[in-house]
Length: 497
Image (cartoon, rainbow, N blue to C red):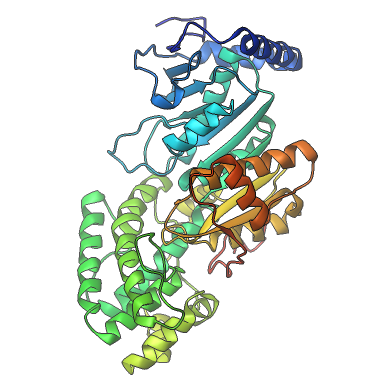
């Protein structure tokens, strides 16, 4: 380990060096950057003294294997690792990538891009790619944000300041990216969220509570399955397994299927939510519900219990509630309410009676301190000061597209609407973007930064950008307007709802 000099990560090139013209262009970028960053020298020097970079000997991945490219891996004082890929001919832009949720105990490598195909196209285009692992797994926003900033500092100390810095991320990384955009806008020029939890933490956990509350109340009222306050991961798994078995049994009857559809509607689980699913016809209620059934089980197995338990430990208690919630009103807002009504009628079941049962059921109260922690760390003000583009698939069951409505609500209340653009791809699944679609979004954001106005963010223009960036993968941008988010929560509204 070397001290007193941050330039100690592993540097790997696959050739003898960049061509003379590329080295000259990179030198010019660095010289210009040094002149523009004099006032930040003291801060960078202090950060540099604190960064202890681990020397590694891993071979450069295929995406960085172009002649003269450099691949750097290191470790931050927090324990997080980072990875950087510098192309042979840097265009002066660095992309700071925030990865998605990593479950506790799962491998947690540093990531600097969404997939190898997209990374390869970006490196060929001259972009520098960087990102960290985050020091911990799970709902790690308090680690992720400083670790991402430290990675950016490490990049600047090694390669010089970028001409342009863009933060981007997918899924939970979209939440991290939006946190960077709101709280550290001085470090970036713009941001791109892909399939992100841009509704924020409180809204996410409230909306995750509603479907499991409906399942327990209507399908397993005497089960005693705890929905919050889970002491450990074993208890979370047991609760998830118990309600999954209930849902499996209910799926065999018309009444059970109708009630599963109601639970799905409270989370806005779409009727087409995986690429392998046939897209149901508009009035094929049974096919629509069959698709939702699988997604409801996925919600139980992934977010509703195990991820909740980890987040509750961080927050110091239960950070969600349904006191005062009118479930008839929430159903009225749902994008799939027509399907629910049709299935209840077909089953000969009273939807009004089931909604009344939800109203009568004992409600769940939140822990005030846990709400304060989640609000402080993971909810948004909507006060953008740099451009942000947010992109979502229309068929996302894990992070429903209605999160975009929650983001727009906050940004509008904060008076920052001109800085936000949102776009939608007409495909199913969580984060199922093609490389072409991701590059099109990036180029649209860059165009906004270059011209000062949003241009070419309509579906036709984005599909044209996608086809130019990568004609080998799909371009599926569509015109779309999501329904309202059922239970928004942001820091731009005095009542925090």
